[in-house]
Image 1 (cartoon, rainbow, N blue to C red):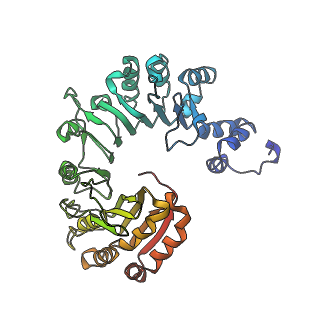
Image 2: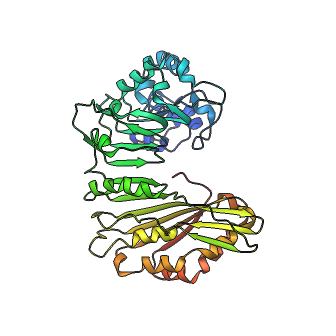
Image 3: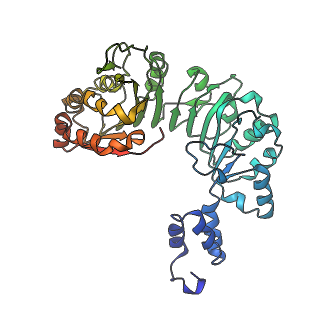
Length: 422
């Protein structure tokens, strides 16, 4: 489309249209005129990925999206306005197999990072575990400079061990995501803790709440995502729920509870291991404003010829729901179960698993008077590994008499997806 053929619309409308365009079309649009150039670049460079990719992180589909710091720096030096368009920055600190992390040999980051004046979100991750102390001091210093920017509000960190929370103490971070690592604080921050609005805690090897509270306060927390791997995690995270009990509205619990292995001695027998046994439930009754509750679980299946082991965590989830009462349920209106069968032999044997779900207990709990405020129940099955049986599984779920009670109440939605990220 040439400029003279453009319909006469406010450029704000063109901006809304270009927001939905992919990068190839944005590049074409940038050639129309000066105004389109500005609007297109706003979206073209809104997110930038920094790194040298040999392998690709699961959530990043295209390795070509990653640019070397030297390439980005030369691009910005040639076109300085590009830096002001960047709102989200992802830095890959991965150590490739048999190689050092690229960032240990790079000296441009200290010059590059301060140029992003309008940065709102930053992500730092490593596919393989990386010690914060192993990253070069110039990179650490550059990060500290970035966190002093007043408009930066979201920080994601994954796979970095020993990240010092003092690095973000001067920031105005409101949304924090920490996964696979161990945050720490040396107590040197002299600034008052600033409130978080959302917090994601993934698989943490170590978490010291008193240290964490020297940097962040949790009494205004609105959204919380927890990963439960063992009974000890429940005791570790329960104080967080207590601190945010008066403000928390959305809670996501990813259940990765571990159990001792059970040997199957009989063929043609599927055995269910109840995840509710000997695992304390999370007390949800203290959450006064909870309106949305999401459970995520990998349902592990171990198959050895005809012998099968099922680890079902839904009973534990139901136990958590039962901690709610009519007086404490508040405004809870939506409950979601995201479940994903994983393990060996799924393509052949996992169809048996669907007959062993505790659907009756689930329906009884969700239809109890304690949860009368719940108006929507989402059941999402990840069928990525068992696509050949997708329709059969979905048909089983739709015909289940216990789930039919939820459907007749007008609150159940059943869906199957190819994949998702917790």
